Length: 146
Length: 146
Image 1: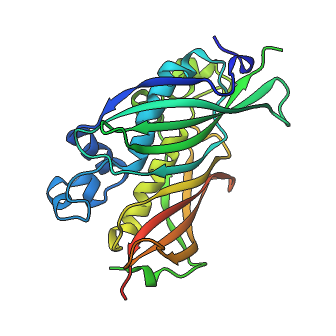
Image 2 (image 1 turned 180 degrees about the vertical axis):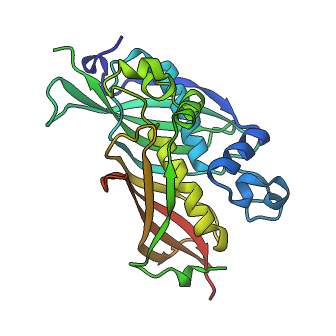
């Protein structure tokens, strides 16, 4: 299990790849973001995107799953105060595969909570053409060893 | 259907309320954010939160649904370039009801895309005690009438 002290600024981790199927895009879209280009394959064809694209929130949530499995699941994590600068840079179409990478961008002790530190990860997700599709900066709270 | 010109800075809309059931918190957690306090009711009791709390991404996605139903569904919307300053200010526990409100914080023509404007909404979600649980600023692209 990792403590706050174990996060080294600059360390990068490939946390995994995810392929967005049409079925999964539509399921997320119908539940959470029912715009035609996320939730309705026929209407998506006539939309400005010319076909289905994943909700931006879905693209984030798929990365969160991998961050949890690869890193947070073995960290003394205490939740997150928030995320910053979420950028949906390219549409994610049915069949696209994104490779997610996180880099430790910043680490500092909490000013208000003794025994707790903050870690900022920069997320980068690239599609199969190598294009950046998503970037964001997410904070996590982590217990300090000392 | 609304155009970019129809968004007036300062206009506020109550877009709806959502109650987070334990079942729904666990379903989202298992799929996208399998930390013990989101995905496992028994382990959540022994966690720093003392019980289940909704994934922050779930709290955003529930608001996105209402924004779509109330506003984007009747807007010439062209997707979103991103969101900023997402703040998860209070844990959202099983049974909590959040009331979501959006305020038009900024509106400007796109510098790069003719015929398109940008609208920034500030989201505020309060729990049944009136406490702010979520704030964020989200951009949407909207067709211009002119």
